[in-house]
Length: 203
Ligand SMILES: NC(=O)c1ccc[n+]([C@@H]2O[C@H](COP(=O)([O-])OP(=O)(O)OC[C@H]3O[C@@H](n4cnc5c(N)ncnc54)[C@H](OP(=O)(O)O)[C@@H]3O)[C@@H](O)[C@H]2O)c1
Image (tube, rainbow, N blue to C red; front, side):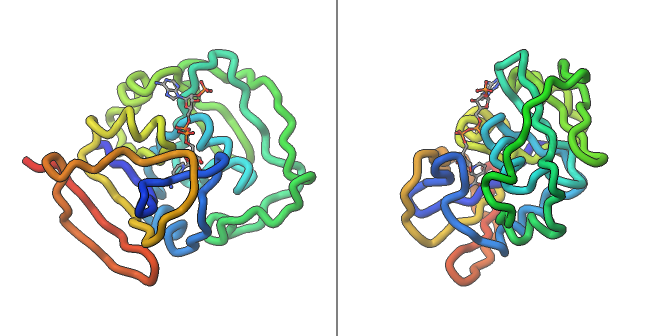
């Protein structure tokens, strides 16, 4: 089972300067609720933006990262511990200078090798999207972005969990078009400024 989870502006923007172009704590909470206990697949750039934001991989989830770089090294969490509940708050309160991660080679890096990062967190690294999907095919995979990874998994996903953000924003990364011939809207939960929408494949 493969699902995509994304927050998308009216003009399709999902990211700007390798970060989210908005601060929506309810959406971060929604993301946490939908992904906790599951396998979360993401591109290297999204993973690094999460590390910068949280100071660690997504907790209580298997973080699966794809990169073409076979020498990719994982960054350890910063010296100072991130503040609890950071995912809900969505902002790393530490000053930029204190957040700098020191790159170290990980002795456990390899094809899908679980790689220890931070206290008790695990990260699996793969070198293609297909390899990652194949390796974790027995698990419920939540694809968490970014744009490159959404584009490569859209035709493989069964469900789209889309937070439609009711504004046009500037950005440099876009979500693929949701073709109504392929995707059927099955639920819509309106909130102030955004809606949680679920799509499934037309049968
Ligand atoms: N609004 C949302 O829901 C949402 C969700 C997630 C992310 N975002 C935003 O999206 C932006 C990041 O998206 P992005 O498209 O720039 O980057 P991305 O998809 O997060 O990561 C791209 C990287 O993934 C690796 N990759 C891509 N395809 C691969 C393949 N077939 N095999 C192996 N590795 C592959 C490459 O890493 P290497 O360069 O290391 O080879 C590539 O540079 C950020 O602004 C982020 O905040 C938004």
